[in-house]
Image 1 (cartoon, rainbow, N blue to C red):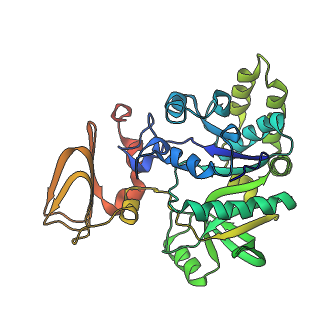
Image 2: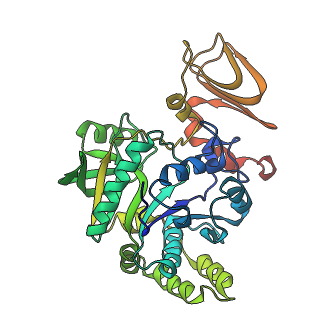
Length: 358
C-alpha cells in the first residue's frame, strides 16, 4: 500500500490509566501493557497505522518518565519523533505542541490523532475508514472524527450526535456532527441509544495541520499565544526551557472540550469496526470468553462454585470459591478485590491509598 507522504499520526501516550490498577500504574500505564495478544496496545496502535503512515511520520506524545519504555517497545520510531510534555495539560496542549513541530517538517501536513490505548482488532475496516477520512480533509478545511456505532448503554464514553448525511464514500457514511456530549448519566445514555442518532466518540480526529492551528487561534487564544512562543524557540538552546514555562502556565483542557464542541466544521464517519477502550476491569467481560458460570478467568486463575467474577493473575495461582460479582486481580506484589460494579470508580480508591502503594 502506497503511503501518503503528507499524512502524519500523532499518538497520545500520556495518562496513568488508573482504572486498571494494579496492572496499570504510573510506571507502566495502559498503552504499554500486553492486555490482548503478544503486543502492547501502543504497538498495536502503530501497526494498524503503518500501511497508511510511514514510520518517519509517526509522532508519540508522552511524559519523560515513559520515554525509555516507549523507545524499547518502538525501536523503529526515530528519537526526534518522541515529543516530551514537561507536564500533563490534557490533549489540546498535546495536539498544539505536535502541530507547531509539524510546521517545521511539512507545511502541507494532514494529521490523524489517535489514542494509544484502544483495542481495534478489525484493522482492514479501520484502515478503509481512515482512508475515507483523509480523502475528505484533503478537499475540505474542517475536522473529521470517527464515531463508533453503540452496541450497549455506556456511561463511560462521550457521544456524538449525527446530523445531516453529507455523502457516502465506498459504502461509508459521513454525517455532519450535530453535537458532542460529555459522558452521560445512565438515563441519558439509554435515551441516546433509543434515539439511534448518537455514536460513541472514539477520540480519533483527522484534519489538515493548518486547520487545527486556525481553530486553536480562535477558540483557545491563550494556548495559541504560548504555541507561538514555543515555535520561536524550536531548534534553539532555549527550546526545553520555553516549553516547560509555557506548559506550566496553561490550564488543562481537552481537544474535545476546547475545540470540537465549539467549531461547526466537523464531520463524523459512522464507523463499523470493532472498538473498545478497555476503560476498566469490567471491559474484560467484552474481550474474553466467560465460563458457564459467567466468570472471566485470565492467566493462572480458577473460579469454583463462583459466578460473574473477573479473575486476573498472570503468574501466581489464585483460586476463588463461593463468591460472585467480584474483581480479583493479583499482579506482582499487589492484590485487588472489589465488587464488579466498583471497577469503573477505581481511581477514587487510588486517591486515598498511601502513595507508596503504587
